[in-house]
Length: 304
Image (cartoon, rainbow, N blue to C red):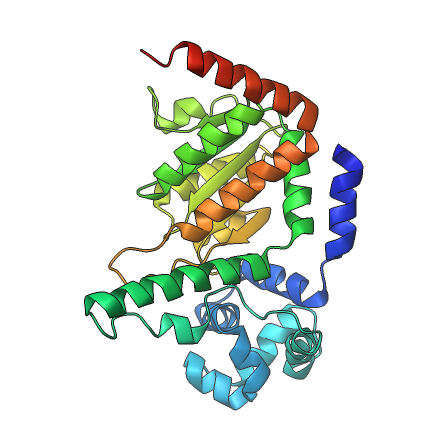
């Protein structure tokens, strides 16, 4: 199945990225190289795409706390004659009926910290979890996941880098992934240092950096080293303005909204399960046989 199913999924979703997606990717990559003022304007456009559609350049400049001409200069850095051409890309996206942005809807985010009674808090958790998942599935289509699964399946090794609470998501991905293909490696959580775990990385490998919350310096350094070695870098993070986003070859945005003091990992777990599911889809025969053998071995040692 493999190739033609993935190709079919990509065709159904649209193989080529539309101009809006290309602009957002360029903004993500160029932002760290910009002056502080242009970087601030770029960050605002990445974090508030709906404002680009609905507000004038003066209004968006006021909201971003920069002078209006900076948005014209930013548009020119991206290859447009002026800001109106850049804004037109955002507006066209809305006219096609596709979602603008990556994050959970504002009306859900606004639930944070409103009413702390038990029944209201339960409602807030429900709404934010559903909103996070809805935003995830609106912004990550089947074609993107199918293509990424194909790329990962072809790599010699798939390294996993994470810090803090995201380590638990990485462990889950390792556990699921290694049931399908024996190439997932968790960095820095076994014996030895992070550097030891990366010593053999090459351009035939991939590194998945998980940072459902803001990434740690260690995760960024792993991504930078992997970039130097030519490995494929997959970033799973909460925003296009995080340092991880700028060094990722493939970027998956996971909303982390929560009414509690802690960011939510619901969307990150959904991405992990979906990604492994698509890897299985492209290697169904060998994956199914491997899963059966693992389950048989587990039953054999179940009493120990």
